[in-house]
Amino acid sequence: MRKLRSYKLVIFDFDGTVTDSFPVFLSILSKVTNKYNLYSVDVNNHKEVEMFRSMNTLNILKKLGVTKVKLPFVVSYTRALMYEHCDNIRLIPEVIVAAKELSSYGVKVAIVSSSTNSYIASVLGEHDMSIFDEIASGVSIFGKASKIKAICRRAGIEGKDAILIGDEVRDEAAAAAANIHFTAVLWGYNNASSFNDKTPFLETPHNLLELI
Image (tube, rainbow, N blue to C red; front, side, top):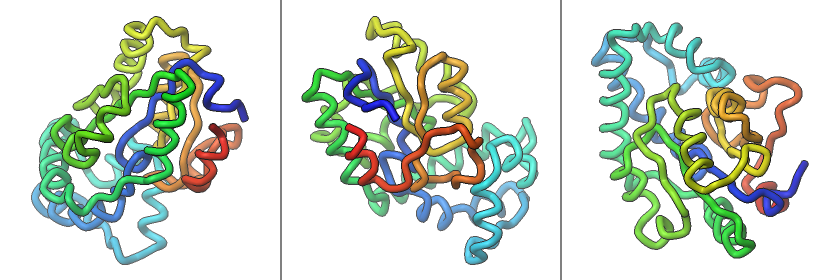
């Protein structure tokens, strides 16, 4: 696997990659499903949770019963609830250390996320926000590719010299659409079985530091 310091730009997804937010997401999920009359996930059933973690975003939305009409309302309400609980969301220390180390090598580091800027700022704090050269927030759940292209364009960096680190299948699809490299992390929302056999992945945050 190519060392991260050999890239000119490393982009991180936020929830599930920079943060350990999945437990908080599970804790607020019933409020979302109840409010919009969606499929009720038994978050205490490990088998059911892992089934959802093995699915891509489109299949998850279909299973939950989220229609195109409901989608923007579901996303907005979920974002609001996550923001309410942002004090309970833990940063992954190794990711912050990795971003600092990459920056010291002269590598540009960025975040691209569907989460709001206020949420990201609250979780990161002013000090850790300053590590990143750019933060693209509030991206639509299927709109990361265009934001990634824009980040690369503003940085003057070609796709071959950029990589996205993310925890979801839609992150991999966005990286492919933006023609940049991708590596998955397995401490977030999707599990290993959701990615294809050729997807490079990191099992633990410590593995990220080893890849610097």
